[in-house]
Figure 1: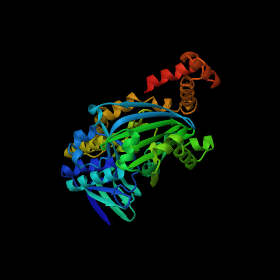
Figure 2 (figure 1 turned 60 degrees about the vertical axis):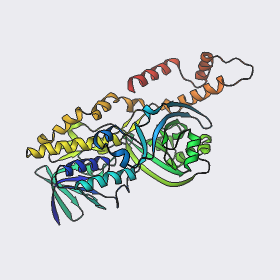
Figure 3 (figure 1 turned 90 degrees about the horizontal axis):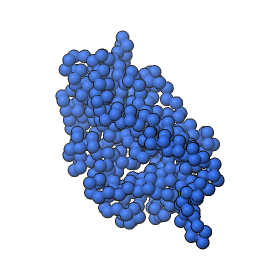
Figure 4 (figure 1 turned 90 degrees about the vertical axis):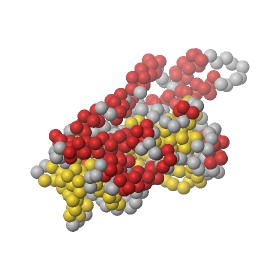
Length: 427
């Protein structure tokens, strides 16, 4: 069977649905294909979404989107097996609506409804096996025995780029360029969440945790408060478990049993366990983002950012989806669909916050590969505070105490200064 559309979008995540929404809203015939049985079924994300792009493109989102809690507290933990040092930022109302916690499954359903209401056709349970390529130009997609002809194809398949890899349309992903995230969700009464995290009903906490959560492997933990749940998880670079000779499920189990988390999760029970790939290589080179008849957007393009302090993806996905839609509409108005006609996608990306921010933090992945961040420095901080806060009749001055612990941990002053400068220059 063969059908014809103006645009075929592969993947019904935030990027693909945003592109579909704006294209359909402008009158194009759009189909969005997704292998999940229903919208959001394969989207694993229990975290935060930054609201700046929603304010710009979906100003009605406050009343419509499935917002769990507005992030009121930002926390960063440096953890060892039995202790933790916490850095917390709290601000009054002006900071409250910059981001919110949400389940991506629910958020994707909301975006999907908007795309369908705009006129896009969403086909779930459809796996795209390949692209229709004629004279080196993409002319549509192949899904099982069906062929869908399209003037434009948008590839939004997410971090697990099976299609792009199978067609050699991008460099092969290396184990050190992607991470595995495992998330657990615990049901806990909203009153207990409010009390334990010091927030009100509509307020939440977003926390990143370093050190013990990944058992010293390159990675870290996260914690987000929902209305009646706490989302807890670990993200570890894919090559690390083998190198450290540890298993991912052991990392997750150990993390959950930390004394601090046991107190925060007391009386809760697990309702969800899931896993997901996270892109950490940075964006694809420009030449892979545009081709004759197609564009690559969202996580498939590497549009995700981890600075060590902030983790982002959904806002990048929405922005890239909007830019892809604008590109196709402009090319369509001129009657072009080849690489040259679609190359304005790159120009628009360069003028967007996506490229500005990815460029600004381009050194972050290299800095975050420093193993000392996950082993020696959390131990140094915890031992330092343990010492200076101990009162037993022996004086403990700050600098001599720090130097003594550094000596025990075999951390040189020069190395500490060097890593500090790298942090400042990278993030």
